[in-house]
Length: 161
Length: 207
Image 1 (spheres, rainbow over the protein chains, first blue to last red):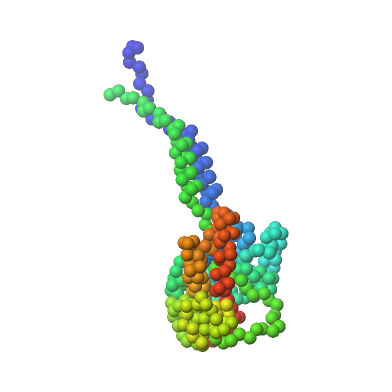
Image 2: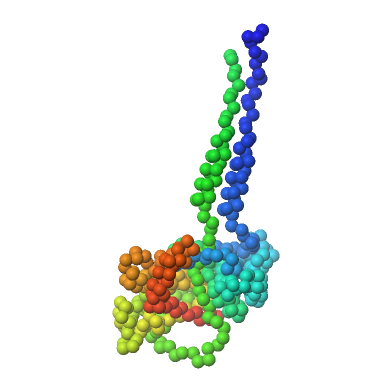
């Protein structure tokens, strides 16, 4: 019976996967662009204080970062709850700051070595004593340009506990 | 019932949609940049002969370990610091050589002579909280910025920018070199009128 073709099974046609690579590439590009390379994982609590009279910290190659704050909950039982300094991926003491700055400076290009800024990313609840010690160390190694990294916001946020 | 196979969806335009989305995200995402208060530390070498500074030219701010403020020997709330600092910097009480012709302050003889001589001294305790310290720094920088804004607008009324905006534009890498050249002397002039003289004493263990 030529008139009645045999019906195909009820299965739905396969969805074309030709555009899958496009979607994957799109995601890839998106994440490539939007990701900030973080060279050290934070081991301290880092809720920055708020300020509004701020300047941008452009040119990432001229900045070295010093983190400080209470050890985050993962490290709290090992390192206690006293505020600590973090340099690169390790907890450090105040005495290590000078050596760290010199090492960072040596790793930069010659023409940038005199224009480096030290960004202090310090948790808001840290005592000033630690920061003063860091500043003294920075003065010793002649790293005089510093930046207190803050978040954008009104100063009154800092006064609440 | 005649059952027809569903026609295949044309996927040719999928790539276009994908690129559209890609470009949209490319344009709208901004890479997060850090920002903060820039400061310069004093060099270590001891000054052999420290200059003598008159008491009236120093504006002392002390923050104790309970995060309370003492400004010019009087306890004060943080919300008043900016106002007080502006009054001090803008006082212009000097006479003769030390007169300040652009100051609009009270010309109180017991306050600063001249913005160029006026020094703000900030002293904190070792147990002061960092965020309170940043709040004070912020307010003191704000006092300078308010005054610089005022003078910048007065000197360059046609520019339509405040000092802070002009400074931001100057620091922006997208600004053309010609515009930077134009802004540079104007910024320098105002900076010279209200130089940021913020001294930080070594923190004390007690008080």
